Amino acid sequence: MATNVNILYTYFEILKIIYKHKDGVSSSYFINNLGISKQNFSKYINQILDSDFGKFIEVDMSSKTRIYKPALKSLDEVIKYYMGHRYTYDEFLALESFKVYLKQNDEKELLTKFKANFIAIDNPLQDEKLSKIEFDFILKCLKSLITGRKINIDYIDEEIKGAIFLKVIYSDKNWYILIKFDDRFELKRVAFIKELEITKERYLSLEIPEGLDRKIKNLSNSLSLFEKAEYEAILEISPKIARYFQKDIKKFFKTQKIVNENPLQISIIYSQELEILRFVKTWLPDIKIISPKSLQKAFCDNLNEALKSYEKDEI
Image 1 (cartoon, rainbow, N blue to C red):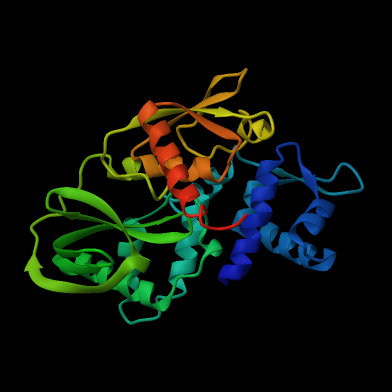
Image 2: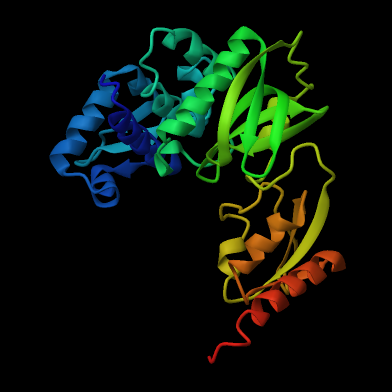
C-alpha cells in the first residue's frame, strides 16, 4: 500500500466516510463527495481492502451495488489499533505530514521524540502546511529534548531565557510548543518565534505534571490558557443560527452544552475573555452574552472601541 501522504489522506477520507455512515454507503457517495472518478475510487477501495485496513471494513454484496460498512465502532479505534493504541485520526495525519520533513540522518530519533511529544487538539495538518522556518524551530526543540538542554526564545513580544521544551501541539491551523519556564507552563505559537537557540545549560528532569496530555487535549482551542482558572459563560443563541448549536451538531467548544431550550442558551467553560469574545464576534448579532457581567462589559467595551474608529467616516 502506498505511503505517500496525499494517498494516505484519501484512504482515510474514505475510511472516515464509511465510519460516519454506520448503516453503509455505496460507491456513488464517494464519487460525488470526494470528487474522484469511478475508476480511481475502484482502485483506492480495492487497495484498502487488500491492505491491513481491509479488516476494518465490511462489504455487503447482497444487492447489485456494493455497500461498505464499518467493522469497528469508530475510526479512532482503527487508528489506535493500527498505530499501537496511541493516535487519533488528527494525530495520525499530522504525524504522516511531519515525516515528510524528516530526511536527515537522525530522522529515526527525532521522529521517535516527535511521536512521544505531539498532540493535535483539532484540525488535521492538511489545513496548513508547515513552513521551513517553523520546522527548523521545532527540530531545535526536539534536539533540546534529546540532549536534555534548556532553550532561549526570542519571541514576538518577549525574551524567554532557560525554558524547557515539553510538547509540540497543533491547533486552529497553527503550530505551538508547550514550554516550562519560571515555574509556569505556556503555549507559544511557533510562527511568532523570531529566534530559538539551544543553551549549554542542562536540566535534571522534565518534571512533567500528572495528566499533562489529558489537560492539553481538554483545551478548547489555541486561545485556551494552560493551567489557568476556568470560568463559565452563558450565551443566548438566536433562532436564525440555532441549528448550528443542536445536540447532534459538532460543538465549537469541548465544554459546550445546552442549558436552556427556549430561548436556546449554551454554557461554555473558558480560561480568558478572548476565547469567548472572538467567538461571539464571528456570530454578530446572533449571539448574546448573558453572563458573567464582566464578560458582557468587556464585549460592549470592544464594540464601542470599534465603533469609535468609524465615527470619522461617512457611512
